[in-house]
Length: 444
Image 1 (tube, helix red, strand yellow):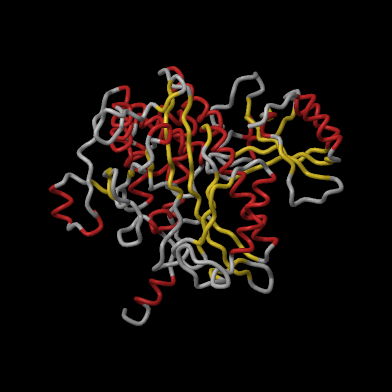
Image 2 (spheres, rainbow, N blue to C red):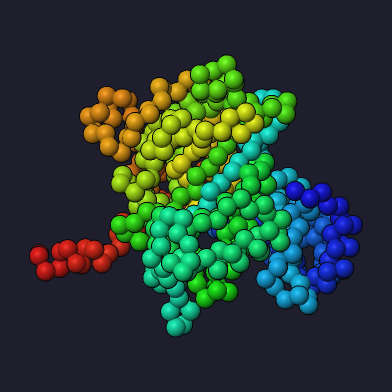
């Protein structure tokens, strides 16, 4: 991440002919918001004097306590490469503050900062996170509205001319690089129309910022290519859904705290406890890592989705996998999160669950090194393998009972999130679907 000063930002905007700045922030559901200002108002914003109406943002505050302030993180300054080169547009990612100068407890970025401080207080230098964001590219109709028709019939690692999304992916990578990303790989995924672009891991807060920027760039570039990009986990029945596998590693005194060369798997006690903490709390935080009704259409057996709470250093069927790399690259890969999640809240919950495992020395059960997908229910029960919740409703019920989640999110977000998600489930469960019409209309 660059190390800008206020003077640097003012100088760069003048030199680069920047005319508009988007002050960005994220609501509790992971939706990117912004207030656009002209360059003449930039110095005021950099002095933390930019106010907005928080009551207009879902899950923030009531109308009688609506005034909120945006405080830009100057190191997140970036110019949008896809905007006009004359009169450019830039962005600054902001923290949300109350009028009395205290951080707003409903700001997801503040919640992640609080979780990171917990790790720092336990002696860790930083949490590094490497996300693997999958998405679909669909055609649009004559009016420009998105469809669920894909423009290719390609599969895993296919290339052009079979993979017609290749050009769009190339443009996405170039734009992301212009915005400071280090792109490690991009390829076609398993399902037709499904893609993945991997960018280099980073410190947790910077990575959460990058995930939000990544989703914005992918959508904007897709639109410029006449396509629609979606991060919905399961847009089409019968094919693989999109996940956001999340690789995590803690560092202490500049060294990877998950590595121990003396252990048979070269994993430290901290690594085992971290795994144990995630496994203990996963059912109660999955509503945060997989937060929409559609998330649980992906989390079903048969499509490589990790629905079973187990871990392994050898195969990819459990919830948690330990990739082969060791030394400074030793990491824990959590495979259930999907890209519809709020990355600030998801990383807060995952980190806090892992830290709880370390704090309370929670040993995980033995690793499961055989294919769980091929095991019978009786075999899984004998191995003590539990499953993730099967619906958003079940996940929210688990969340509502979790003291850890309440501590992580804080009272405000905890109650607002559960209230909104229960309403979402009620709305969904009372709707009449085409499936019901097809199945029942002529039978009954």
